[in-house]
Image: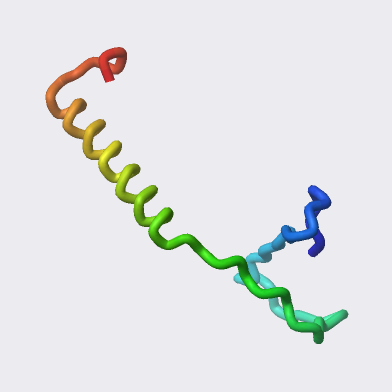
Length: 72
């Protein structure tokens, strides 16, 4: 669906759980090709994942050392 925020390079995605659905009827089928996905900055994503992992490990070490919540 077009973006509800009005941004032209965004889209709303609707997910439907079909586990209990017994019959599906296609009302309107899209024939045009969707726009290409934006390229990902893999190094930036890897750096972010590494930083989050280090932060979680630091928190785990603080908890195991008995540091209070205020000290963390």
